[in-house]
Image 1 (spheres, rainbow, N blue to C red):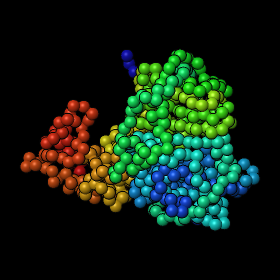
Image 2 (cartoon, one colour):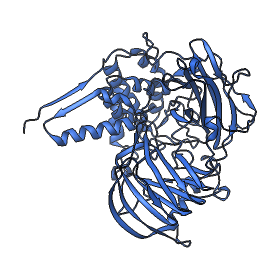
Image 3 (cartoon, rainbow, N blue to C red):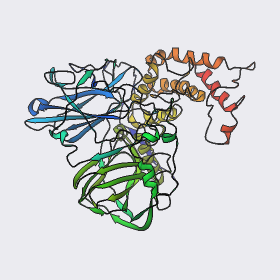
Image 4 (tube, rainbow, N blue to C red):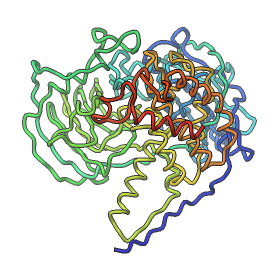
Length: 575
């Protein structure tokens, strides 16, 4: 069959550098008045959740922006409505700054700007382990309407005790899982309700970087159907699955030891076994509601695997414990909480009768969502998912006479935009890590789908700016970054892919400035490999995690490994 196809990228490929002359996405940011702040003496505390609030006049704020950065993660609201999430990830010693316009968001009179910040303070492949802080201001032109660290028009802060602090890590690669203990008024502070202020202290100012990555889109999607419903039975004697995210806490893997955990929903959900299940095919439409009683569940399907935030409006008639269990596939007829080697459950203790508006703080990857209840009966008044994806892919279009090819293209677009929000990542669920080698292939696709190399330039900037990479040998690059590797582990093969990708990046971007700036990094890397060359010029007995692929080939990586040396030959040719 003759296939007629067209791929149109609605953008201009051109020269780019770390500081572009047109200022697009790369202009060095600055704060007019804001200082980095955090509750006094608690900047290194693990999994601390803090709320910041300021009130601004709607007339003045209509032309304003909220400019902010912080550690580890923030979520921004205006008058209780979600506005933004960030910041984009950057290298050690630097902070990327976001700006969220308020035009069309504010109303006449007082407007409440509320910012939630999670300070994680653990090493991971997802976020840097660094002291927590928020630096934020609301500015209209040169007029500062509110700013952290300012006494006259500052932000007040309080501790958000509704998020349980001592919980397990979500996975070995990411930070903490989510457990909440809520009242119906727990989020009233976002709209001007009472809060208990805590004293803030000013934190050190770090150099600032532009976000560079496009601002994500947050479309809200409803499930397409309910696919199962049934009852649960508690099996307290069941042997539960656990892993290093719980058992491995120690000097090289920060977290709370198992005996200190306030609750372990991963174990609880495994012990709540399906007693009876009925398959369903009930469409979900706007305005639908579903009742879920004690030890009952309902399973919902979304249109596709997607990355983002689980959200729901729930009414309960008595205290209830609500579990959102999720996965990308069904395992038989079940949504498995263990298949993905993660704690794929977000837990809410609804401590009083009332109505609750729920949304996960962290992004997850899922297609299936199982809602489980223990305690009072609940009614799902709304259920959905706020996606968290790169919007630049909408600039690309593909159409052919083969519907299979069209579906493949759309699947590729979906895969990319979920894995390129603020750094090229290997997966949007378990890890969200900026792995080398993965980045080589994502970089190729980014130019095709987005019509620019902004994300790839940002990826290289993260590797360029740190003075050194802690705990790694001189010259070696982190296998994934931004991340911390206190156990000194690295993949020498992945550092080779960095050089190969850099050559291709120059070809597709023309960005000689970035390549030249990275020359010392490349030369140091070559010096590292030189010490492992044997008399034939082949690499022999490479240290650390020598990785080729997930196959039997990876059991044959010593002493002289041909795939490793083939890649090394390409590195030498590129350099």
